[in-house]
Length: 151
Image (tube, rainbow, N blue to C red; front, side):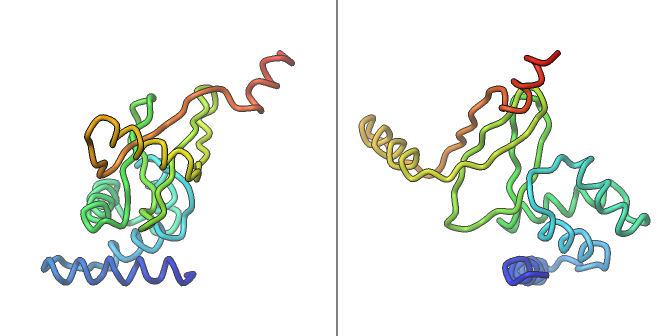
C-alpha cells in the first residue's frame, strides 16, 4: 500500500474506533481495496473488484463500508447524468472537477485553478461565500468521435 493509501486506511481505522464501530476483517479488505483502486467506480464495479479479492464479502457489506468511508470524509459519492452513483477517494485540499463522455462513460478529472477562481468571483458577485461545488462537463470523447466517423 502506498503512503497516501496507508494514511487513508489508518484514518478509516481511527474513525471506526472513535465511533465505536467494529473494524471487521471484511471492512479492512474493502477499505484497503478502495484506497488502492484509482478512478470512479459504481457500487457494482467496486463490488466485482472486492469479490475477486474475497468472494465471501457480500454486496451489502461493500455498500455499507463505502457509506462509512463517505461518513469519515475519506470517500466521495459522485452523481453524473447517467444516474449511477460512483465513488472516489476523497483527497483533502485537492478539489477537482470532471469531464464525462456521454458515449462510453469515460471520466477525466480536471484540475484548473482558473475554474476555482472564477467560481469564487461569481459567488462573491452574488454575495455568496462558497463552501463547495460540483462541476461536471459532458460531451463526446475523442475516441468515440473517431469511432463515429469510421462507422
